Amino acid sequence: MLKLRPAIYALAALATTLAVGSAPAPADQKITIGVSLAQDDNPFYIVMLKGIRARAGELGWDVATVSANEDKVKQINGVQDLIARGVKGILISPIDAVGVNAAYDAAKAANIPIVSIARGSTSPNQTIHVAMDEKQIGRDIAAWTAKAIGGEGKVAMLIGPSGAPTFRNLADGYVEVMAKYPKVQIAFKADGPLTRERGVKQAEDALVANPDLKAIYCANDDVALGAAQAVIAAGRGDKTIVTGMNGVPPALHAVKDGKLAMTVELNPFLWGRLGVDVLATYLKGEKVEPRVFIKHVLVDKTNIDEKLPKQ
Image (cartoon, rainbow, N blue to C red; front, side):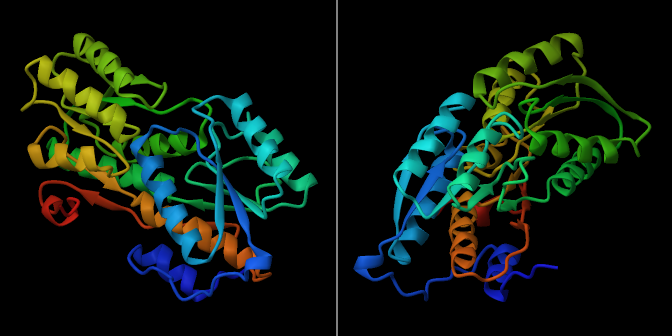
């Protein structure tokens, strides 16, 4: 079994300890790594890229980025561009678990490690996946929701993109736990892009079909903020709870303001740092587990004050 060095486990388990002791590479051995994230304008990925750049800078590395913006062909082409530029490793958050496998094939052919971060791939050429425990997060959201609604009532699920196993696993964990509550009915399910606009539209549809909806599960915070907007517009701000995921600052403020009931903090900044550290370990020739997990924390009114970004 492959082993991950203790320093990386500490970062993944605690999500609070930052490894800063590594010496920069000599000037004549400058390392450039490539980054291809699924979206450029998603707050989660914006913060993750900051974490990647911060840790890479501490190591004396340069970071080359390419845009994808949920376009699979664009992501494949971007990775091929990074390979042509001679990067030493690639961090990628694949848009689709299968649809961008050509990018992994290209990296393998060039003998460049390609590390999935957040979302993962089915490609056998994925070097490492720096992931979240997706099903357990789904279970935890469901358990929290069931308690919040008193173990009964209708709920809606606004799942993520259909081709991304991350969101399928989250939803499976949620459904698994909700099945233990016979008085809870999953009355509405829909998948789609991770946008606020989609959250508004599908929450409106769910509320029209189920005016007595007790809760709306959302695959990420952007969808949740849109759903919360629809709930408030329908006059159900105090009757239908909305849960998100990722813990980006706008969602944390929405929890503080009572617009969102709960989100899940994944700390994308530390996640980005962890991705760089895992890649650094691999490039040194040290053994790394094929899957490394980041810690998650449920954030609601009980702990929101300690989680809000410091001004």
